[in-house]
Structure formats: C-alpha cells, structure tokens
Image (cartoon, rainbow, N blue to C red; front, side, top):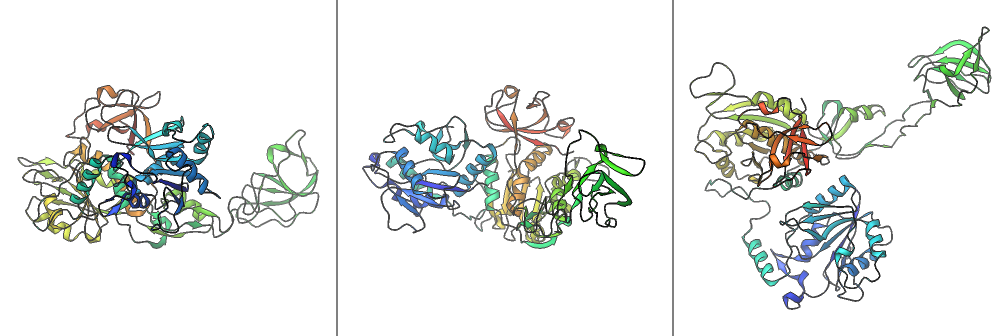
Length: 596
C-alpha cells in the first residue's frame, strides 16, 4: 500500500469530563493516547498534536495547534506542517479517544483507500454515521481543503470533507466523550478476555462469542493467523504460495538485441545489398553487417553487429538483383528490442507478498529466476462429519449422499489451497479430539458439519478442550452463521463449516482468500464490487449470501428463491453476492465468482 503518515489529535481539556486530560485516561491498562499510537504504529511518521508529553517516544513528533484549543481543523494543519519535509502521500487522522481501536482497522482504511482511490476514507460507527476523526486522507486533498478556509480556528471537520469519500464500517471506533462512556469502556475492558484467548477453560465448555461481521472476520484472520514458515523452492512447484521476499531480475530482458518483427536487419541508409544468410530465433547469429548490407531476420533473432534498424516485411521490396529498398511513405522505425529494454539486472519483478501465479512464474523465468523464498501453498485436510453421510455405495435407511465432499478439493484449489487428505468422521464422543491432536502435519483443517449446537454437534467442545485460540466464534451471515475459525496449538488453522451444503460452500468462498492471506502473508484479495439490481427481493435484517448472475447491463441479479439443502441453486449462476442488511436496489455488493 501507499506510505502514510499519521496525525493523532490529543489536545485540549474535555469540558464534558470536568476538564480532565482525556487522552491520558487509562482503559484496559493503557491510556487512550497509547491505544491510538499503537493503532498507527505501522505509519511512516507520527505526530501528536496537543500538550507536550515527556513520556512519549522521541521518534513521535509533538506539536501544538495555534492557538491552543482551537479545534481539530487547526490541529490537523499544525500536524501537517510538522510532517515536512518529504511527507507521505497519505495521512491517517485519528482522535485519541477510541480505546478499542486496532491497527487492523487502520490497515483496512488504508486498503480501502488504495482500492478506491478516494480523497478520503472514513470509519463508520454502528449506526452508520461517518467518524471524521478516524480516517485516511490523500494529503493533496487535505491540503487543498485547508487552503480554501478563511480561518482554521474552531472550524467543524465537515468543512474539510471532500466530495469523493468512502465510508467503511469498522469495529472499535466508539469514542469516549463523557464520564459514563469512559466507565462503560473501562468495565468492558476489565471483562474482556486477553488478546490470545483460548476457546474455553479446561472444563471443556463449548466456545462462545458474538457473531462477527464478515469483513471484521476477514481482517482478523489476515492479521491474527500464524504465518507459514518461509522456504526456498522452485516457483513452478508452488502455485498458490506467496513470496516471502521480493524477486529481482538476475539477467536482462531481452538478454541481447533482438528483432522485434519479421523483416530485414540493415546497416546504414538504403538501398541495401541483401545477403543470402538468414537470422532465426535461437539459431546462429548472422555475421556482422557492413554499411549498405542487409540480412533476412525473424522475430526474436539476435541481430548482427552493425545493425542500425530492422525493416518490417510490409515496408520493403526486393529487386531482381537482390537489392532491398524501403517502400515510399513507409514509417521509419527501429523495431529492435535492445538488451535490457524490458528488465535490467536487479530490477523488481514482484514484491514480497505477491501470490505465485502462472504469470509470476513466467515473468521470473524470463529474467533467469526459477527459485524464490515463499510461504505456502496452504495444505489442507478435509473432514466430512456425520453418521448420516455416505460417499460411496448404496444408501442405507437414514443416510444421505455426500454432495460436497467430492467437490471441495476443486473449490479449495480456486484459492491456491492444496488438498492433502479427505476423510469421513463418524459421530463419536472423542472423534474430534483425536483429529485435532494429530492436525500438526496440515496447515488447514476444513471440517464440514458439527458446528451448531445440536446433540451430535461436538466440534466446539473439542475446540475448547484443545485450548485453541478462537478467532471467529460465529458469523453475522445467513446462511453460515455457525461457522467457526480457530488456531490450534500446532498453528494449524481450523475452519468449521456448517453441514448445510450451500452454507458450507458459501462461507468457504467468503473466508478462504482471507485464510490464505493470513497464512501466507499475501496481499489482500481485491473484491469484485457492483450494484445489486433486485435487492428489494432478497435483502433481510442481517447480511445474506445468495446465488447470482451478472446482469447484461452491468452489476448483478440475485436469485430470490433457492434451496440451501443442495447446490442446485448454483447451476447456471455466475457466483454469489453478499447482500448487506436492509440493502436497497443499486446497493454495491461483493461478488464471489464461481470458477467452474
């Protein structure tokens, strides 16, 4: 992402709190200013605007708005001035009164700015209201907005807001403006579990927790999943991995001067005497040309010494006595690809965190790089659960056909995940305990079924007994709400999918890219976004994931009627759409394409 500086607003006294130094209030064992500084810890430079604080790290710049207490706009201007010289193109603006804000939230704002190119990206609170004191700005837009104001003193933040903005719903953006809000925050912090909490104590109780919005769950997986060990290997063997270090060109591209077209290599001004020899790509290089000579040459062939240009076939004629001439009015072109025109030794071919794809493998090979330091690809074991499920043979009374196990390896491969093993687990009291205790040889366990709270749904209890780190207890999504994601002590990721076929496929498609990004360190996936034209017929009180097709005029049309008990609703559909709660026609939605 583009580099960013940070301006943290920590000035003045809180009048609604009796004049206390609000940023210094301690919540959850740290001050709100410390929480803000931790959230912007990944920024290039940070400036705190407010009273001088001797306890701050010397690397943190400190400045005061003029006059003191003249409001956030004046404070932002003072912060921008302090960031000279060589300021970053992006600026994070953050008030120091949000005790639960995390660096993950700031990373998401930066990612959204990178994806959309908006002049400013703001966080939204639970009510959907934009919070102008937690946002990412293009510095040029912020400087322009400040320059248009007659005065900076006591101006509202709305005076700065540009026309092109994006609002992102994030957790942890609630501020503390009153004594009561501070008390509630302190009580919440005291009752919260530590950051790396286990699913439950040794009692073996099932893990619980609030359902997470899909974007919050994805961001958490990207940030919290343990990275795979980096290793050096041949690139062609690890499609789906991510680079753990950048790839630099080992050789030049092209390696030598070559013909860019089929035609004639010529020396000097024409006409030229045409020699009998011919230059082929990969063949022997023709001997050097003297002025006034030409030689037939193929695309990609090494041009002979003395060549001043290559003439395309369509721009030439050859006389009966073997003299080459340029046709009248034909353009004068060089048509030689010079050594290193495309890449020179040491040039960047692909940055760290780039996924290993066919294109990357080819680009690296073209500059003599066939091996690289990578993480991944993710190796998965699929576990189908339930006595009622049968993969092969005739069905017995009470049994049903396994309709998703056979397709999961192909689906996982869409996201670069390699299936190593696929097994069926019967409903037994200790079955999951045995599976989790031997999971260390896999990077990912994909478990289908047993994620709910029924009599046979024993996965959550096993997660608790394994003292796993519970990352996603449930999803705020329909279907798929019972989805669970945890990290075992072996650092294996556990993805528990609902047993309902459509819910399992939908939540897998929604979460698999984030799991791969978290484990391999790959850049976040760029979402497919477009308007939903029939939201009125499918939207509900919570987000939904629904089969859809691309509309011929752009955007998407969701399928109003489909069964979740099978995958028939995916036939003749292009993918799925994630429909926000209470969406209206034209609402932008995320599209998850079906790869086959």
